[in-house]
Image (cartoon, rainbow, N blue to C red; front, side, top):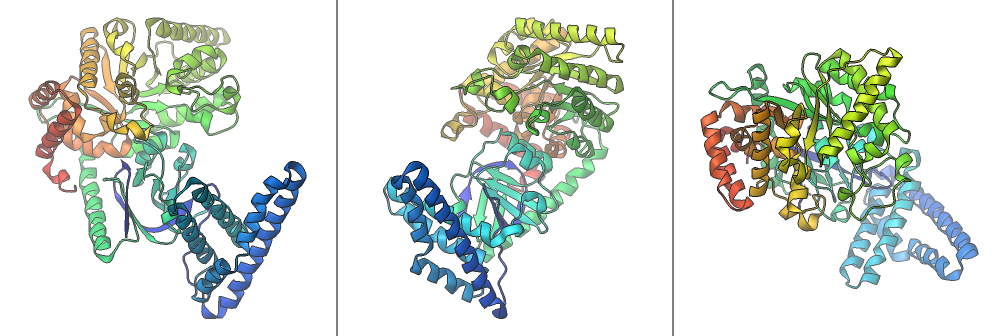
Length: 583
């Protein structure tokens, strides 16, 4: 049994066989072969080996012609390794013991690769890459058309990968993908956010672990505690199967709260809304009990395709979300693209930035590409005729930026009027507060905006000077830091003075530990990952405003994040003891 720890990003327990999903996306079959099929499978293995060797020989020839003998020697070494008698003997022996050729080859080659990495010395360790290359070649020829992509699954699996793109995550079939774990990633990555939206147990940021998985063992993914267990022993398996059953029972209990209003014990309503990435998430969000969409991240319209989305693409997406929430607010965040996530059409305009978080992104990008910006604004104004649609500008840092964005919106309104296109003129216009400059100037902004939404992911990153995706400093990224609490209070106070709503839409608001604090700081609207809605509703219904204010006051007087978070965790256990028993 091997235990790996990472970052818990989507709660729940998943148990099942592994599918290693890498660059080549191979599913390594677990099944044993029959005695009668051993000779056939040995022949299939040697046919694949011959095809792989022919491929290597061709690469060797082409490389020698174009680059010379020195570089061709790389493939010569691959060829020698592929024909190594000892290696082949071990693979053949496993096949004779009724393992599939794919499994036998993967097990033997990964064993050799791991031994090389453990010998010491970078040069020797780097040779393990050559073994992985041979493994991929063999698997490709063994599986041929039987190679399985994530979209072609026919049986339940747990997906293990170096990384999953947001689009790959969004397209996971929940019928067959029970959970996933990745070597890289952070708790605020879009992949993590999507995992929560899809309600798939997930752990990210584990570090190198795929070499320890042959793709066939039973795997446990504990998305509540950030644990992945490879080949669990019988006692551990029983323990986690019981945990899985308790979690399902807990979910069913929370789901019953949907029929009750989201209000504190003393009757103060708290609006719980959903964060979404794709239009298809809107309906599941409504089913969880959301009172609208507080954050629709529209940049995925750009990242899903190589082409720039048209005005009609935007319009159809917004209408789909409004269909799920015809009588509730839907807040459209305009493009939050940057040099770290930018479609090809725009990427060519910008060289790689040393620090994408401080470069051209979000509203800065929109103001530099006005046609792109206007296309989105036209679609929002047109769709707003059908419901309570609102516009929110991201990463506003100065009053001038907000005013410039409002001027562009005014130009679009004039264009639609001249063209006689139906649209809504009085659409509410708000802004994200996610940089310290905006929080410091909150009173001035509050005179010009219709609402605030605190984007705590970036606010924490910029305030604490911590790259939220950098595992080396992830321990410094703390939502409970006193500076963050002070900025949230400052924005909430500014909104209250000017009579505008203030919501929180970052990952902080999806953590039940922070709900009493936020309510105590004056927040009455929260936008969260959809799967968190029932649990947060339970916290709110067990809370009084008096207690929330007391919690916020006590937390605000603490000096370090660790003490704040420990205190909040203790208060949560007192508020919701039944839910805390799961931990």
